[in-house]
Figure 1 (cartoon, rainbow, N blue to C red):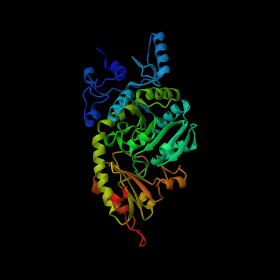
Figure 2: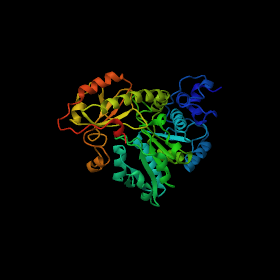
Figure 3: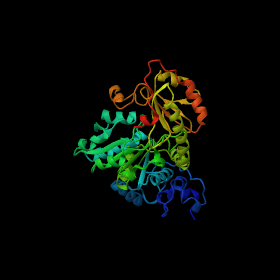
Figure 4: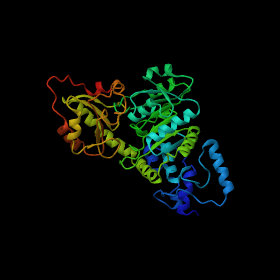
Amino acid sequence: MDTPFDSARTTAYDDVRTTAPRALATEAVHAGRDDLARQGLHAPPIDLSTTYPSYDSRAEAARIDAFAGDGAELDGPPVYGRLGNPTVARFETALARLEGTEAAVAFASGMAALSAVLLVRSAMGLRHVVAVRPLYGCSDHLLTAGLLGTEVTWTDPAGIADALRPDTGLVMVESPANPTLAEVDLRAVAHACGSAPLLADNTFATPVLQRPAEQGARLVLHSATKYLGGHGDVMAGVVACDEELAGRLRQVRFATGGVLHPLAGYLLLRGLSTLPVRVRAASATAADLAARLAADPRVARVHYPRIGGAMVAFEVHGDPHAVIGGVRLITPAVSLGSVDTLIQHPASISHRIVDAEDRRGAGVSDRLLRMSVGLEDVEDLWADLDAALQEPRPESPEVKGLHEAMS
C-alpha cells in the first residue's frame, strides 16, 4: 500500500477522473482530489520537494528526453520541481475539469502565463497578435511594447477577421473586460478567428459564469490570484487548453522557470472548492450595488455585465480620488476577487501603463472606478459607498440607467 508521502508524489500524475458528468459545484469540491480517500487521506498533501531521488539514471534520461519532445506530463514520480510538482498538478487537473478542457498549466502569475503563451506562438514563427481592447493594463502593455517580440493589431470584435495575417498566432479578448466590464460574443469571435487560436481571459467571469472553451476558445487564461484563489493571499496564473498546447506551455515553463510554488498550488486547490459559492454570493451583492449606484445622482454611469459577476465599474460626477480616500470598510487596493471588497482607480493604477489616448479610447475614463465586491453585507457596503461619494455638481448631466449602461 502506498504511503501518504508516495501518494502525494505520484497520484496527481495518474489523471484520476470520473466518467460520469458532475455539476460544477461538485466538481469544484472533488476535482483533483478523487484519489485521496483511497489513499487514506482527506486533505491534499503538500509536496515541497524541489528534487526527487532516483537510482535509475538511464530511465530518468529517457523520461526527460520524452518531455523535451512533446512536453507531456511525466509518467511516474517527479524529477525536479521545474518539470512539475504533484500539488500543483492537482490544481491543474481541477481547473481543467472546471473549464472543460483537456489540460491546464499553472504559472507563477497571470502575466507569466500570458508570456508563456506568446513565447509558444512566437517560437512557431507566429508573432502577430490580434487583440480587442480593453484588456488588463499589463497585458495591453506587454502586447504593445513588443517586449517578447510580438506585434499587435488592435481592433474591435467586428474587425478580427480582417486583421488576421498569415503570421497571426493568437487572437486575444477579455470578457467581461478589465475594467469596463465590456462583453464580447465569444462564439462569434471564435468563428471570426478562423485557424488562429482564440485566447479568452476568463478572470472576471470564472468557470462559474462562463466556460469559453465551450464557445470556441482554444486557450482560457486566468489570473488565478483573483477569484480562483479568492482570499488575496496567493499569486498565480493558469492557462486551460488542449493537451497539445499544454505540452508546449510546460516546455516554456521549464525553460523560463515561471513555476508555481507548491504552497500556492495547495491554496488554489482549496480556493476552487468554494469558488461557486463565493462567486454567486458576491455576484448577488454586486448586482444590488450596481442598481443602487445607477439610481444615485452622484454617479454618472454604471457598468455591470449582462453575464453578472462580482465586478462593478462606475463613473462619478465628482472627484474619483476622493471616493478612494473616503472609503473605510471597502479596501482601496489593486487586484480583485477577494472575500473583501476592493476599489481602485484604473486610470491611476491598473491601466496607468496604457497610453492615455488608448486608455480613454477603450472606455477607461479618468472618472471610472472599479469595485470588486466581496462577501460583506450589502447594507454595510452601501453605507460605506454612500459616505464616500461626493455630492454632484449642479451642471451634472442626466444619470444613465443601469440597463442602458450595460450595453
